[in-house]
Length: 234
Ligand code: C5P
Image 1 (cartoon, rainbow, N blue to C red):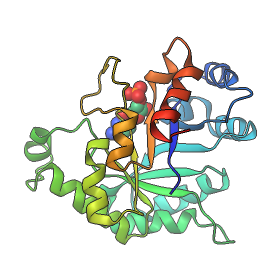
Image 2 (image 1 turned 90 degrees about the vertical axis):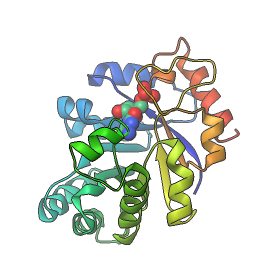
Image 3 (image 1 turned 120 degrees about the vertical axis):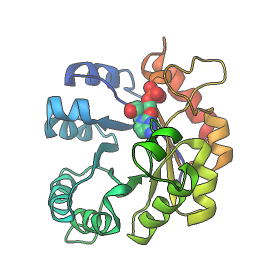
Image 4 (image 1 turned 45 degrees about the horizontal axis):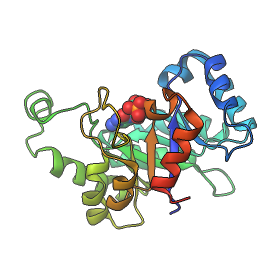
């Protein structure tokens, strides 16, 4: 798996997203993540527009529903020609298998499919006392990752600090996509379990998802290049 940096385009409109991406004219076209806010406000046209500009796209919609509904929704997303999509592993192995079926095109190709294990916003206290998952965080993450692998998914989204544990349980070819990235000399913002691009590389992340350290930087292109240097070694 070739390591890469994915920029989280957490903007609220097509206009602000495209003017941000305009900064990268003449650069390597970054792999971008489109989340719920942008997709729900702009619809599929935002995906077509960014795709037409030559970017790869991770559509981060975290599907979680009955298998039949997820299969049909994934078929629609596959036709949009995105490069990576995701589901919640909590939807069960049956749901993840249905997602994979729905995504697979007639010629056998499909976007990468990854699963969210436990959101990094869920703490141990909520896991045990609200969700009644007594197994604890690490055991749950490893089990959900194994379930995703059994369903034929390509990997999971997790904290970079969990990537080593997932690789150990599921094999080095099972992808880890990791947000929670900050430069060593920068603020953490609202992220808690963070690490640097260089450390994420050492732990074994395949893709880092980086938002504000690039989008809010004074010079976003320079910040993106710094991520590539530290994480990919370009
Ligand atoms: O700005 P920042 O680098 O914190 O952005 C990280 C991105 O990754 C955001 O789009 C956030 O929603 C997403 N994300 C995350 N933690 C997760 C899953 C997704 O930070 N567990």
